[in-house]
Amino acid sequence: MLQRTLLRSSRALRSAPRLTTPSSAIRQPLSSLQPYRLRPLSASTRWYSEASAQQSKPEQPSTENAAKKESEEKGPSAEELLKKELEAKNKEIVDLKDKYLRSIADFRNLQERTKREVQAAKDFALQRFAKDLVDSVDNLDRALSTVPPEKLSATAVAEVNKDLVTLYDGLKMTETILMQTLKKHGLERFDPAEQAEKFDPNVHEATFMTPQPDKEDGTVFHTQQKGFLLNGRVLRAAKVGVVKNS
Image 1 (cartoon, rainbow, N blue to C red):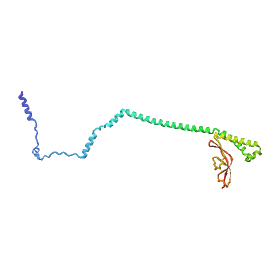
Image 2 (cartoon, rainbow, N blue to C red; image 1 turned 180 degrees about the vertical axis):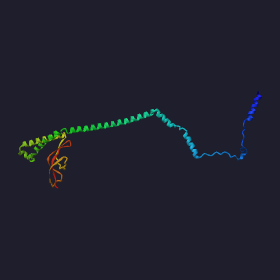
Image 3 (tube, one colour; image 1 turned 90 degrees about the vertical axis):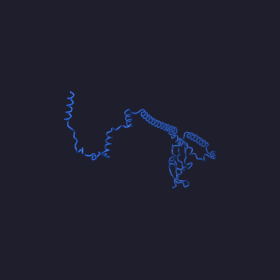
């Protein structure tokens, strides 16, 4: 049995086709064979390869971007919330301080205005009464001016009626006391012709103008009606005559 198996194997090997090498290849000397040379890659090919390699690589997100994205996903931190709240409180404090200062300024202005109004009401409360009283003072002044000065001299007293002198003295004392009382309440009479004052349209009313060679132009030389001041304010302007030489 073993012999049959070996015989069959030998027959199969004989009948198998044999590999033949071409004679030209065998005859060609080894010196004629050229070594294989690697062709270097060009710069463009290398750049394209690197670029394509970089494009092929997935971009790795940086640490900052990742942290930022993570913080956005988580929302504002506690520090940011406290900072925003502090800014809002500071803004509110500034607003309240501005309103407080404005309120103080308005209150002080109101105090000053009220004080001035109260003082003005106090100073000029007698204005209407003073205007009505001025006419009575004028009449008293006219009554005293009707008595000539020569009839009040010492020689005239013995010859003329003493009752006239007594009446004049009584009226003069009444006028003096009345003017002192009015002056205590701010009402004061003035006569511009006594001191030859310059004409002032704010306190004087020119009724006539006449030349006076010995006086300067614009000087008050005659008082037709005396003026009155109430706490420095003109209650009634004085009616005067003014010098006009030109």
